[in-house]
Length: 323
Ligand code: ADP
Ligand code: F6P
Image 1 (cartoon, rainbow, N blue to C red):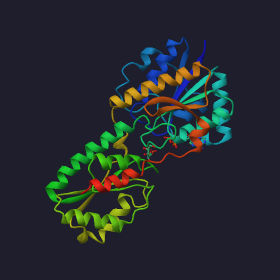
Image 2 (spheres, rainbow, N blue to C red):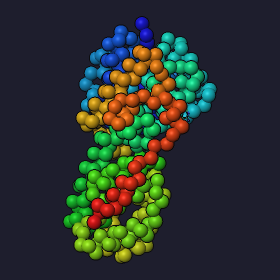
Image 3 (cartoon, rainbow, N blue to C red):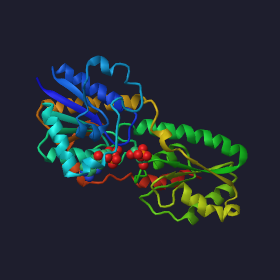
Image 4 (cartoon, rainbow, N blue to C red):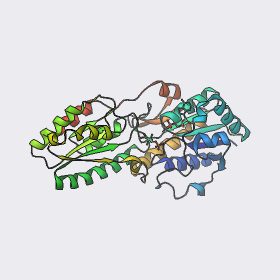
């Protein structure tokens, strides 16, 4: 019998539980033993393994977060930490590991794989900044949460003729901001990938005011040089020029804690299942993700060597649509 382990790492993402469930039940279906590792790489280093049965993953497909817990683990970035993790895996007779997580987690997965251990990654982060998957587990739900907030803010903004700066997550990646901006009908979008002069935003807000708009919405990525705080500070000195009164909302972790929607549950289920299939074929050192709508495996070496950028043409589209 083969014994495998699964962990979730980095920022949690809605749908991680659905991926754990798929891994556990597909693994059991192969006649394997499946262990869960608690709190990501921290649990791997400490040997915090728990056996997972079919019932242990019952009733979790609809829950946000991760039942295994997640962590940021600086120790795993050191060779000493990774050796401790490798020892734990060998002591527990584990012969394959599935890592559900984002960019950093898959970098760790690649390093473990380079040490000779069979690892398969599952693409999961709300940031959508992971090469090898056009969309990652959690993005769709996080985006819908941001949109719900934006729609509500537009209602109150219209009542008061206000402009709102709404900051969304995404670390260094502007994907969430760009998509939330387009789908939320924003007047302007600010992302880290494109340097934006606050003066340009001020001019756009003023122009929207003069066109008779009842409100204006600027969606800002947290990683942009001028994020919500930076822009608000800048505009404080120039409030009267904007026409609108200005308010700021930082959505923060609210975006991460939601219950996964249908898209994320299905994506997580497909990717979790595929990770088991690849291990069963003896193929590893891979990330499973979605490319052109198909579940596809990309070598982890390629994943960590490349950067995924949002489609920057969409920034221009956002501008055109903000008439
Ligand atoms: P995410 O996976 O969501 O991008 P992080 O970037 O915080 O989240 O990474 C999660 C964890 O992955 C880190 O806390 C660390 O344990 C591991 N990790 C990140 N970068 C590396 C690296 N360069 N080498 C080894 N492990 C890493
Ligand atoms: O990677 C997911 C993410 O939510 C990023 O968008 C954000 O920058 C970061 O995690 C926040 O990290 P933490 O939860 O450790 O504050």
